[in-house]
Each structure stands twice: as structure tokens, then as C-alpha cells.
Amino acid sequence: MRFQICKEGPRSSRPPRTAGRTSQGVEGESHLSNSHTKSAWKPADFSHLKRNGVNVEGATHKQVVDLIRAGEKELILTVLSVPPHEADNLDPSDDSLGQSFYDYTEKQAVPISVPTYKHVEQNGEKFVVYNVYMAGRQLCSKRYREFAILHQNLKREFANFTFPRLPGKWPFSLSEQQLDARRRGLEEYLEKVCSIRVIGESDIMQEFLSESDENYNGVSDVELRVALPDGTAVTVRVKKNSTTDQVYQAIAAKVGMDSMTVNYFALFEVINHSFVRKLAPNEFPHKLYVQNYTSAVPGTCLTIRKWLFTTEEEILLNDNDLAVTYFFHQAVDDVKKGYIKAEEKSYQLQKLYEQRKMVMYLNMLRTCEGYNEIIFPHCACDSRRKGHVITAISITHFKLHACTEEGQLENQVIAFEWDEMQRWDTDEEGMAFCFEYARGEKKPRWVKIFTPYFNYMHECFERVFCELKWRKENIFQTARSQQRDVAT
Image (cartoon, rainbow, N blue to C red; front, top):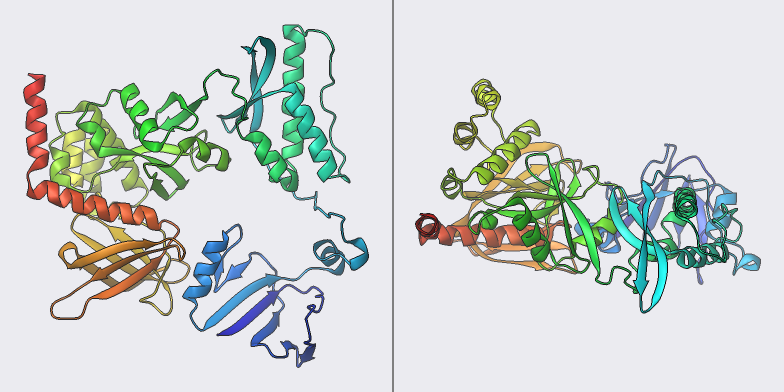
């Protein structure tokens, strides 16, 4: 494999420390003997760390390994070179080993707050806990002494940082006014400390913001705020360790979904403004609250969306007001975002939208390209030596749209019929979704798609084939008829 390392930025560089090898410069390039690594300097402003042209700032180790594998025989790295004084902090001299160097200049806006406190009686002891929220989501409840321990641990780790004062101890019982003053002081402390990125993202702080082993609620209940398709939101109180299925059932009960409708929606995570990911049944939604401090939807990273590919079966729910309302609002949003191509019918659709004729609006929109289709972010694919693919899954076919590494669509599109699919699976280590297809008399072929959403893609495949089976066995109509009989 040949490696190219492009170091951007007109800064100085420290020669690498090598074991038994020397580094030498030749005509502006740095060559390392006994190595295939070439370092080319380009006078450009550094903006992102990249692997094979893909931004990997904040990427996981597996994602970087995946990109390295996708590069086959060539690996192009974009690496930041730094001034000598920064290099000393990153790679200190031998006489400074044992000391920690942190950059306290990088700030971040963190929507952390301590809006409330409550009195708790547990095991015969009475005390007060302070509820910590992040972007409107409750993370944990902590006693004052836990804040004091956090303060000491942070001062020990970040010894050369000047920390704000923590509200002082008080040997006597505090009045409600004093408790509220302490609450405000603790909130101000967290705001200031977490605004320093290296401290806010440290293991010490992250562990503090996780729920304590001690449970001050008597039961480990948490509140989750979930967005609904109609633009409203619902808050449910569930166990902290509730799975996706348990949380979804609580939401379905609160909004009034019947036993039939509940099968056609699911709980999703908002990844960004253009993509949502269905949560796996065994995931823990509350953990996403802790991990997603800043989400695409203010106040929540969880949302309810339609989980259905078959439009014929969707029509069977036309007499269900809640289902139609959710279908309608999600469809309107999908048209605005360009997921559904409705340009030729935009005038008629706008009129139906203004008149709130939901069923007629949906009936017209279902004939448009992109309806009930899930499109994944562009990613690498082993069937393409250069460029990426954009994957689209619908009840009629499975498409791979060729695109550039930046996601710009190209002309080539490969469409697979579902009866061409032989097998499919996931590669956990390689972070890839794999499928085998066969066409005519040709030998079956495996294709591997490298995406961090490989599990979601696999679940989409399973759902499509499940719905195809339901349609073949007429299960939708039978179940709906039975429900109507029970209702009458």
C-alpha cells in the first residue's frame, strides 16, 4: 500500500522519532527511509483532518479504519502541522513527562442548566438533590457533596486552570431561598466549567453528568421529550434503562395509538436536518440524551416517524384520524426537504394543503417519486473504485446512486429488484452492510456498503421483505378487517 500524507498549513514540524531509521528532506519532500510514506507540503489553511478526502474530525476509530480499507492501495491523509510551542504541549520533552498540557482557549456553548431541586428522603436520611439538564433534557440528579467531589477531581486533573468558586458549604439547614441561591450558583459553575471544551468533554465531567448509582427518585425514572410528526412534542416518564420498544410503547399509549397503528410508526434519532435513524429495539434512548448535547431539533434528539414502505397498506388507515394526521405532516415536511419530487403537482398539492384535505393530499403525493423511500447519506462502496454511492430503499427496489466523495450526484444509477436479492448481512468490524444479488444466469455477487448506519440499512431490508410477505399473504387487509369488526 502506498501512503500520501498531505500536511496543510505554513507551520513548522518536528522530525518524527524513529527506531533505527532516519528522516531526510529531498526537494521539499520529507522521506522516511524503509517506509513507503511520502509527505507533501502544500501552503494551504488547515480546516479539517481528512482520510482519503473525507473529513474525520470527531470520527470513531472504526470509521477511520473503514476509510483506510476503502482506499485500497492508496491512503491520503490530511494532517495538521503545529508551531513548536504547540508541539511541545502535544509531545512534551523528556524532562516534562508526567505533566499534563491542556488547551483552555477552545470554548463551546453548552446549554446546561440546574433549573430545579427537590427534597429526598432515603434510608432514613433527608437531603436535597439538584436536577441537571442539558438542552432541556434531564441528565441526572446530584447532591451538593457530589458537586464538591467533582470540583476537587477537576482541580486535581486540570491543576493549572483557574476554576470558578463553588457555592460554599453550610453546616445548618438551608431555607428555600438559600437552596435556590445554591442552585443558581451550581448552575453558574457548570456553565463556566463546561464552556471550556477540554474540561466539559473530559471523562470526569462525562461521568458526573451520567446518572448516579444512587437513585434519588426511589425508582430510576427519567423524562424523555419526543417530537411528533405534526410538529408537537410529548414527554413520557420511563425507567432510565428502558429499551426503544418500551419507550415507544409508552409514547404510543400517551398519544392514543391503537393496536393497528402502532405497527406503522417507530422511534427515530435525529442525526441532522436531512437524516434520521431508526433506533434498534434493544437500544437505550436515554443514553442518546447524554450523548446528543446539541441536536438538530431543539430540545430533543428523538422523534416519531412513519415506519412503512407499502403505500397500499397505508391507504387502509385512511379512516384513522391520528395516522392520517401523522402521515400528512411528515409528507409535507418531506416535500419541503426535497425527499419527495412533487414539482409537477406542487400547485394542486399546495391548494389541498391549504384546505387541510389530508387524505386527498396523500393520495396525490403517493404517486410522486420518493414517497415512502429512505435515503441514506453518501458513503463508500466496494463496487466503486472512485467516488461514493447514495443508497435509496423503497418497496419497489433498492438503488445505488453514484456520486462524488462530496455527495454530488452523478448520472449512473443501479437499481436492484427485491427478487434479485439472495442474502444480506452486516460486518460489525468493517462497519458495512453487505448483500448478495443474482441476475439471470450470472454468478451471484456480493456488494459491501461502508456506512455507520449499516444496522439501520439491514433493518430496512428486513422490513421490506416482511411487508412483501404481508402483502402476499394479505395480512394487512385481514388485520384491518378484524379490527373494524371488534370496533363495531
